[in-house]
Amino acid sequence: NPCFPRDVFSDLPKPVWEAVYHTTTNHLGLALLDVNYQMLPGYDIVIEVDTQVGLKRNMTPGDSLSVTFMDYRLFVINGEIYLHINADTVIMTRLILKAKGFGNDDEMHDKFTAEDQAFKLNNLFGGDQLEVTLAHQFNTLWTDEGVHGKNFAIFSVPNATHPDNPAAIYAEIHITPHHQVQQIDPDRYQDIGLRGVFEKVFKKGTRKRRNLNIDAANRRSMITVGNVTKSDIAPLASFSTVDEHRFPGKSAPFKESAHGGSCCVSFSVDDINLGGTRNNHHESLLVGIAHTKITWKPWYIKSHIPQKE
Image 1 (cartoon, rainbow, N blue to C red):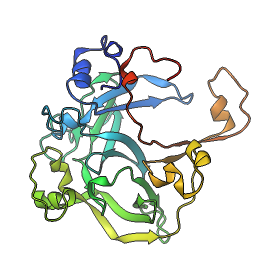
Image 2: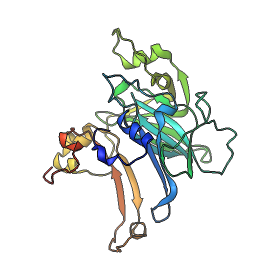
Image 3: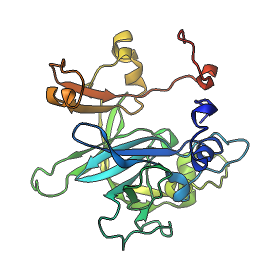
């Protein structure tokens, strides 16, 4: 990862060092917390996902810094954990988490041999008590934006007539200028073949060819249900950002380039003060997350960044 100086990683185990500097960073970090929001010993891990499922982006001198995966996010829907990643566009799979030694491993495979079999991932670094299994190969959520579709918000809507049935799953695929929502089935897909992938990736009439491992997931086009629901009414902001105060109205960068906001994690007064050294918080708190693109600076790789920067 060129954003950090080498001495930050020099004392780490060799597999971690090589994963960071001889490839690009595709690591997924997971940790289980106790009631005090402290990491449970042995349950904090780092996993390199793409190499284990055969999707590692081809490494050539021309694209050696091109990552396979970016922007990992987890969504809990219908009691299941779904992993959402930006690749060429959004890909998703279902995660199965369990403590080492618990549960039945008969249906788990140690090697990725079939795309629709549950596959247990090896931990690259960290503890040895948490085991992560992919329920199946990643499915790709294609939209009319093609490879420009990123960071979809995933949510569920309860069944109004049968509340005990699983809730319908939706993806918010656009925010501006039109708000668009699509119902999806993350665990089912249609194989559109490489020709179908090329039609999604390249402009019509363009003569192109490529041989990328990621296309094994790209061709697994996620099943969608019904048509896209479209509205000219922008969704209400779930939280405000500094940019919105600095650039109010439609020109707010967060609104124009919605790079995957997430809101909101609710913390009560008791939650905030729990396990801490201070007890001076008297109001509840909603924590929201928004990430936007930043311009790379040469001093990112320096050991000591000047305070003025």
